[in-house]
Image 1 (cartoon, rainbow, N blue to C red):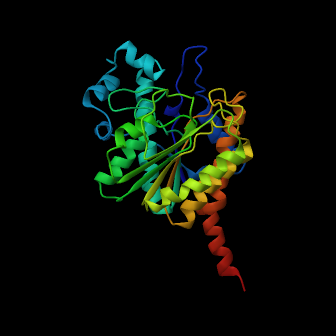
Image 2 (image 1 turned 90 degrees about the vertical axis):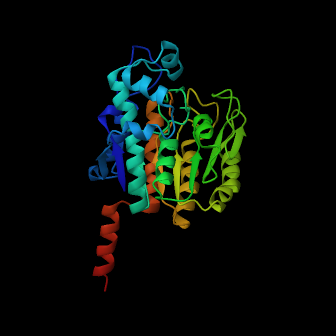
Image 3 (image 1 turned 180 degrees about the vertical axis):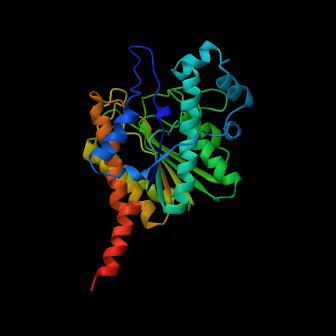
Amino acid sequence: MRIFYSDHYTLELPPGHRFPMHKYRMVRRALVAEGVVPGTCFREAPLADPGALLRAHTPEYVQAILTGTAPPAVMRRIGFPWSPALVRRSLATVGGTLAAAEAALEDGIAGNLAGGTHHALPTHGEGFCVFNDLAITALTLLEGRRVRRVAIIDLDVHQGNGTAAILGTRPEVFTFSMHGARNYPFRKVPSTLDVHLPDNTDDDTYLLLLEQLLPRVLAFKPDIVLYQAGVDPLREDTLGRLALSPLGLMERDFLVLSACARHGIPVVMTLGGGYAEPLELSVAAYVNTYRVAVELFGTEEHRSAQRGARHEAP
């Protein structure tokens, strides 16, 4: 399993900013320290070519972000101050998901330890999302004829309004978003399939709905799944309003990833949201997503060991 990461994912923010920027390094360190994946799985996320951004965003918006000429109101809507480091972070986030998609087509699964920036719309970003890596990746794969159909399974607690706005007219894309009904964004853009959950939805209710609805996504027969695996449905998340437990989130990931494995569908995992208090709870949930992935798909090292064991068996 190749996992794409960049030091550009972390940038300095003003004191008191509510976005937990240091979570990216925490997740990478925890994955290795806890033995979930070896350090050799990590690859440097490339910076996306600015031309790729134009598949999902207007030239005016892309140029304004790249050159630092976006009006203050645009940056306030995103939630980050403009800086050259923000540009590098945004390009690396998109580049990581693009690279993970190519790796998943070869290996069956890959991850980006950022991404899932599903609130970025064609003309602007919002909700801590600058460019929409999910939409850009889907359109890049389709236009390059790498795949015929893409499914996006978005289980972040917030609805993927930007993804739906960009891809809603594309018959080759199935967008599935399962999110808090009363949570951000307050104007939701219809996905192919939306599930609006009441506050305090628990494990049993959530998992039953997910199990019932995943077959509709699979019936679309996607050639690849882009999985927005945000962990903000966690009960302790400060921006979540749902009530999933760590075990419930692991079962969520198992339902999604095992379905992809059974049907031979390559899957790309993106990090999505996570704002628990303390933050270590979100980090542990992100790590658990990779525990499930390794259990179902294995890493190349695991697969090599398994092949060797079979050859040595009497």
